[in-house]
Length: 592
Image (cartoon, rainbow, N blue to C red; front, top):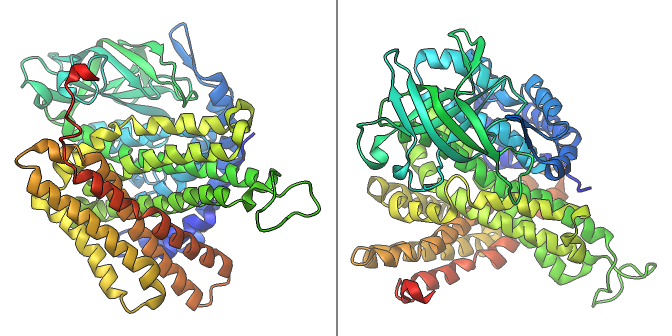
């Protein structure tokens, strides 16, 4: 069975050495001292290792079952979910007035990583609920907040998001689900939604569906979409449960991975629903949930790679195969361990340098969300809006790639189910697709986010890099290995943006054909910035006489690897972008 141990030391490094959370001027951050966060993360690590990780294979092999209209989750899931609820893990950053602990979102993110690494399918039940909580918190009425938020925070009731229909995924303007107004202010919701994660199950008392639908007579397309609360079981104003609503499960989808999560086809047959926010403004409310989910999915990408990496390292140290070309390193054994071979080292360093860089980028993104929401910081809000498609798209592409790379370390054993490595790859695969397929993330980045607010946010991003390089120019230990590669990569990214400006207006395909490369290029630059910052933090810790010298030296060496072996990929992506759309669009549709 695969192993997993929460990387608590590195989580602490990002929170305190890199982000310096307890020193920030954001409400609630001053409480996040090292001792407090260590206690929370250590306990989360225990839950991950002792409760969630052993159920990962169970969920994968058993899956969910639909019996007489009721969805049954895998053995042990309900009991584990009760433990999560009782431990307060589902309400970590929920507002205290709704029964939460009121911690910053960055702490929710830090705790969420080991939960996802240990059992991604299981964690989705509370993850979707957290998103539903956030959408109602921002756009619901006071009565809706008072009724739903305490129950969603505690996960007594769980939540979902219902967007996709059989004939429309990304293009939600094509949806057919309708909401007919009733005299009492409610709506009758009718239609079918597919791919609904945690759509139904037996681990909570009620499921609160957030459903996009069109009110007859509204505007065409996406402008006519509204958002509704549709409970699985109807209730009174005090939350007392009553009759079953007109909501049913058509089937459970048979999927490549995340078998422990009940991905359902949901049928709405004049189900009673309640409008959130204004009519025809549903996407505004749903985007609260979707944007939060995209950061969470970006976390899923690297968190699955982290779990796969841990197992690959253990296997590489244990498996004896061949001899080191420079001489036997295990002379008393029949062969040397795999980890002596340079290509295995390359593979593992690729994984390690990505995971640690992505962790830093994701936590920084969560920090920006806290700053935007708690300090009403428009610059932080604009920056995280720019970075969200990068965090989601780049990190899930790479997360899957490195889950496969970890599988490769095992050779043939990686392809055999009993070793458990295929599950990491299969589970990671969905992260590239849901919450907006990665091609759509790239289009969003290039087509919308670069030009947002007159391009001020991307220019602020470039200025941030330029300022960091200038401020540290005299640091010789940082300059050659970190600042110069970052400067070169940033220039590549700016050159790509300039190409889009000069060629995209006359032929938009020139920009869109390069959008995927741009997303990956920007992902590399973001991780390059994170590694430069982390290297500086590690060097400062060593100068201050840090007791764990090996940890900080390893951090610097890992960052040096990324800057030299991974970051130069920006030149390749720029070369592709500069070819424009001609070769991409050369064939007629019939020629494919």
